[in-house]
Image 1 (tube, helix red, strand yellow):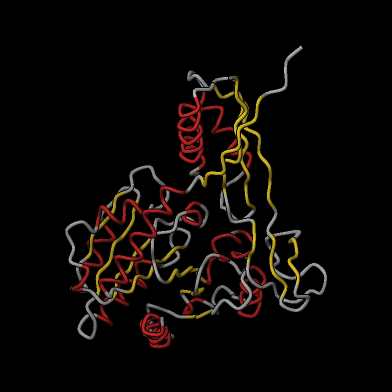
Image 2 (spheres, each protein chain N blue to C red):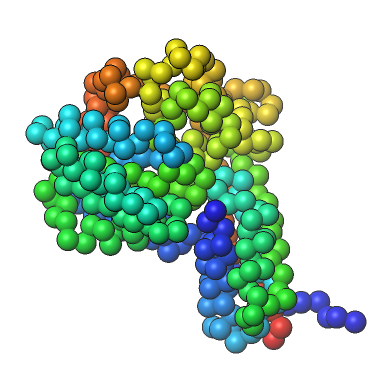
Length: 114
Length: 228
């Protein structure tokens, strides 16, 4: 269970940006890759705990889930994986190649009061 | 009526701090000529036993050392010190995984140039370590025959991020009716092409192949550098 420290990193990172811009955060948008090793529900719960009693209390964490995109060497196309339990091309069923997307955990945007 | 919130684009990787330190470590390891192997598994899969046998077998031919992550005790380090190799414990307290900064801080007084191999044993956990790069060259994921063949399906992220899967406690395979083919299929389903080794650190079966593979990966890294 490492989501608590990750939620704290998200808040720190967002606060740092907000201070630079001189704005107050009302929401944080993150992209959560299916292969980043972080559980959505745990992250949401942790966020509530981290922001409680701080200037961010009441702010929202908006999570956009990013599925894993693999390169299929047979189709020669990027393909989204329906499940990370099976790394095979959803079109031709051959073993998946390189992961193109879905490993990241990124803060993508802030909702702010200016 | 509430006005539309103003949106400011940011695009920052949440793991940027750890990834940055891991990158620095990787450069330091290469410059010093030390090949770094990390091990992850669930608790009780035999990481410490495999490490003990590995250090004992390699000590003499190679300059080896180990860092061992543990939540609360120093028992593993004491066990491993019997091999004669330098061993240091990282007691993580409540932290369920190693981070690059912990590795960096633990190595502060070590002369990396005097090592050929450094082994890092992560905290027993198949979830959290997946998110943290430690700057290692080779990441081993261990699963023991007693855990069931579907471990990779339960923890796809950690298996996908590994370089070699090691099936441990092979001496118990028959007793627990371990289905070898099913286990290999389960690994291939989440990590196509991942090499799978089976061994028993206790009896020594499969240890020679394991050690040869680790040594050959070090040589392969050396060649890659020369080619660059």
